[in-house]
Image (cartoon, rainbow, N blue to C red):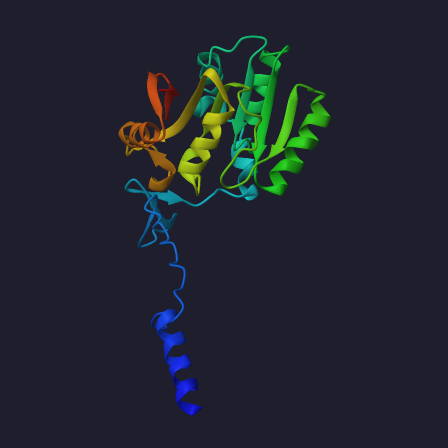
Length: 244
C-alpha cells in the first residue's frame, strides 16, 4: 500500500515537472532625466543647469517697484520694443511672466480688437494685474495663473508669445517652451527680450543676462528657429523665433 502511494506521488511529481520559484515581473527601468544637470549654486543662481547655463532666481513681487520705475522707458526704450513687435489690431498676444503688466497694458491699448493674456505664477503679481485691469478699465486683458512648466494657454491660439527678462528665470525652460509651442498658431512666434550678456557695462547680475548664442542654442533644442535679431535696444536683445 505504501509502495503504491509512493509510485503515485513520484508519477505526479514528474508529470508536472520540476518545481520552480515563482517568476517576478521585471520592473521597468526608469529613464534617467538628462534634460537638466545640477551643480554648484551661484549667488544669483539655483544650482540647476540647462544646456550649460545656470538658471537664475525668480525676481519676486518685491521687485514690482523696479518694474514700474519712472526711467524704465529711458533705460530700455520699451516703446520701441513694443513698436517692433509689429502687432495688428486683432492680434492675440501672451505676456508670459507679465509681472506688473508694464508691457501687458501698453500692448492691450494697441490691439483694441485683439487680446492679451497676462501670465503669472506669483499670487501677489496676479492680484496686482487684476487690480490694474480694474483701475484702467482695459477689458481685452485676461489674467492667467501659469505653473512652473506651462503658461496654461489655450492651444493654437497665440500670434505672439513674449517674455521680457523672464526666460532666464524659468525653472523648467524645456517644458515651458514645449507648452508655449502648443499654444502658438501655425505661424505664431515667440519673442525673447533679454539683457545682453555680451556687454559687461550693463549693470545687471550675470545670471539675469543671456547671450544670443545661448538663447539660440536653447530655442533650437526646442524646435524654434531665429527669424529676426534686433540690435536697436540699448540694453536688451530682441530675439524673434518661429517654429521650425
